[in-house]
Amino acid sequence: PQNIFILGIESSCDDTAAAVLHNGRILSNVVATQEIHQKYGGVVPELASRAHQQNIVPVIHEALSRAGISKNELSAIAFTRGPGLMGSLLVGTSFAKSLSLGLKIPLLDVNHMQAHILAHFIEEKEFEKPHFPFLALTISGGHTQIVKVTNYFEMEVIGETLDDAVGEAFDKSAKILGLPYPGGPLVDKYAQKGDPKAFPFPKPKVEGLNFSFSGLKTSILYFIQKQVKEDPKFIEDNIEDICASIQHTIIGVLMDKLKKAVKQTGIKQIAIAGGVSANSGIRQTLKEAETKYHWKTFVPKFEYTTDNAAMIAIAGHYKYISEDFADMGVTAKARIKM
Ligand code: KG4
Ligand code: ZN
Image 1 (cartoon, rainbow, N blue to C red):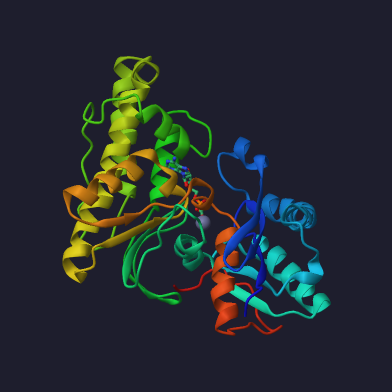
Image 2: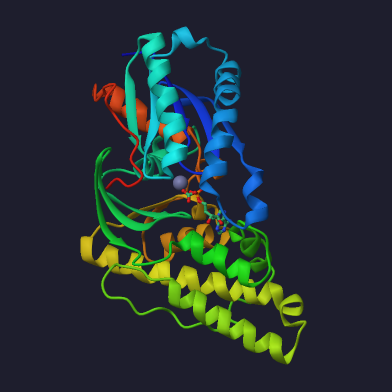
């Protein structure tokens, strides 16, 4: 097959996204971010699905128009089946099914977490792709996993969080500091100017390759409450150092587990994926690991870190090649295994 045009549709959480891929190369990648959730300090599922309803047609139109192709040229429709918020997933799933039926082209169901990892296979000139097998650290607002990736769709979770995801650890810490949602990018911004060793926070003790972040959040909360009692301007005066210290602790936890996973599997190729892989500290630490530990590390382009449809389209592209099509009976699933 020489001319594969895949339309990818992503609607698992609060971003409505569509992308068009030609033979694995991006023609367009459109995301409509929902601002409405900011004032609630988190994603409100009911509001998210309503916004997806409003955004999905214009976003798909925009993706096709920026790609410069008509819907009749599409080879197949790829959509996020899960995991995610049911009401949000239903919008993309139903729309993808209707479009595939109307255009009489195949439907491809995609696992959102696999797609975050497969984003590394989007054709980009200056970007090198990982070789199988490699380890993927998926770090987002909903997930924290170490995955052994043996092939495009052969993935095994070898470690995961027992409570909060890394993104939640960032967002909840940010909330304690009075920063708006989602606070992860703001913690990153302040951290760049702060001293990472200013305030040592205890690293959680968890066996094996699993993670736990809820204890860290609690110790940050108690620390901040205590300091603010003594000095009401503590946060304001130390925001950069506090953020740098929180980020340093989180990165330390991730690196400890990665080192363990490398030792256990003998695999030294590491790819990061998911919203938190946009974090500048994580990106830098991982690049440094190339010389420090002789790993080969893969960091995605910024636009493929947070939720997007390009990653759904590339996952669809590989499913299309292996003719792994979904039938009309396929349903959205809030929880799916890797
Ligand atoms: O993958 P994603 O867009 O959505 C989920 O599937 O969860 O990830 C969103 C998460 C949020 O928790 C957000 O705060 C975090 O990624 N995030 C960051 C940064 N950019 C996004 N966390 C730390 N530093 C960043 N630069
Ligand atoms: Zn995601």
